[in-house]
Amino acid sequence: MKCRRTIPIICLLTIFLTLTTAGASAAESGIVIQEIYSDIESCDITVDSSITIEDLTLEVQLLQKGRAIDKATIPIDRIETNSNIIKFVQWHTTSTPDGAYQIDAQIFNEKEEICSTEYEFIHGRQIIPDVIFEGIISNSEGVSAVIKPTDTSLADIEYMLVEGNDIIYFTKDEKISIHTNPLTVNKRWNTLLANNKEYTGRVKVRISDPGSIIVATDTFTSMDDAEITDIYKDEIGASATIAGNSQVPFDGYVRFTVYNENSDEIMESAIMRSPILLTEDDETVETIWKKRLTEGRYKLAIEIIGNDGDILDIQETMIDVEKVTVFSNDIPEGTNDGNSTPSFLITTALAAISAGAIVLRRKHF
Image (cartoon, rainbow, N blue to C red; front, side, top):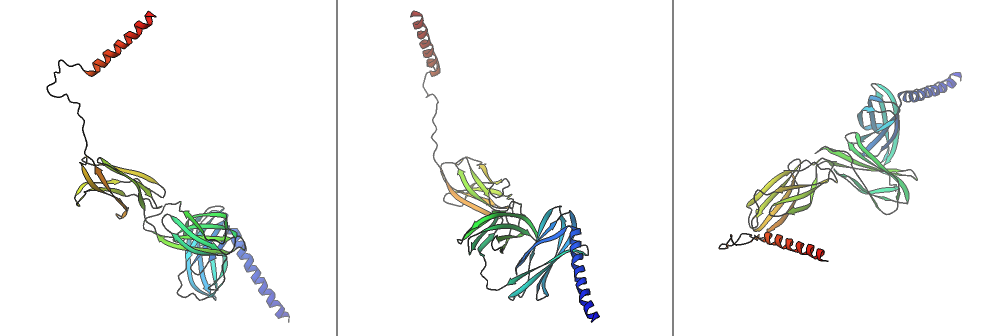
């Protein structure tokens, strides 16, 4: 009996020591896994640090019934003092049966575990959520989503731009009043994007009561984009106002081509470099024809050429050049130049006579 009583006491002591050691290790390291959110498609992990630390490793596993079905190893290069970072994992699973799933997250400093935590979620159960996403679109400009709550509430809406495992842009709207009617939310990326690179837009909605979270993601390939918003043209030249529609810097060209009205014969052409444009930037690009267009009608095509040489936008219009009437000041032939008086001399003489008359009149009175 004495032995039987000793065994559970030793087991409890071992568990207590293990938990105490893990807690002490996390406290000493200054690193805490502050939050995990995951569904069957993706996961984000927020790591908080009270000190500046470098060269850590985050290991994350997706488990079902204790069996690992996917995992990721993510380097953490640096965390500043009293700050946090968010890491992202895209799950790749071939089979996702309904049921309970678990996330195991561990942070290592070299080979020493300094922090760990677990997270559980249910997949596939027919439970009506507090809010649903009716659609989400991400592109090089930003992210837009339509959300529909089942009841009136307040929500915090977080917007994330993901590159690989890193959240490279994060912002949020707090205490947004949401109702049962669909609500469109959007946010522009306030960071530069590389051309032809894959990114993911992520929107997370936190309902304040009862405290539920729902997430939607959308992956896109970044590209430069610009459009023509205004044009001017005449027989001397043309101009186009160009607006940027992407956080990929547009560093392309504007091509002006003038054609004969009734054929594809090119009468004038010019390719002009555009200033660098981002979302909501606009600039005017102009050109002057090598020769003034003569009387007639012409077709004008204005094209925006992107960073990769592709056509981003095109506008076609007409130039109508009317016949120019020239008024001549030449003196007709046969006029006796020696006997004529220039008009400006006559005007000057009349002005002098008038001034003299005024002076005499003042003296008389």
